[in-house]
Image (cartoon, rainbow, N blue to C red; front, side, top):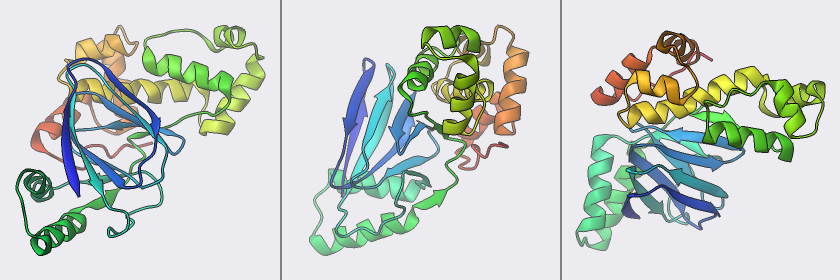
Length: 250
């Protein structure tokens, strides 16, 4: 089990890759996103993301983002899940992970510490972190454009012209591949991007503009509908270390 810390002075991208080890991303400060298992995960400061060995994934971070990455031997570690999942990483587990990567330890003590860490990790509902990604190339183009710039305000009709597909088929495909209408998916995409911006310390007024809402009140209303609480409550929960602050309502 080895842990490294990444400090991104500039925006960073790790294109699709795979590990023979389980990977745990945790302690994120800033905006860290992961694409894996057909979904887009926004990794908050209060939770970790467990990526099983053999799962193809890509990682992006914005300027100023910092995060820890722990690799766990798949031959000796239990399989927490067969798919990418959110996990709690309690303070005790964080301290042990940092300690094991900083100090020499005899084999028996290290193995015991590794088992303690694994025992402290707890799988939680990842749905509020997860945004399903469409696989159709035309829809994928739209989805990535909206994640890169959630303030884009093109209508479904405009996108249909952009990707050369009828409005009816575009609407049908979006629902088939994501389980949401185009409008619902765009709202959820905006909220997922907003989670990272709020965690990075941007004020609500700035975040609302960045994700496409000129009126902060409208943004707060949408955020509350998706997440079950206000942006202010979410930020307060991050500061308090509340691991359940991501329990959304949809």
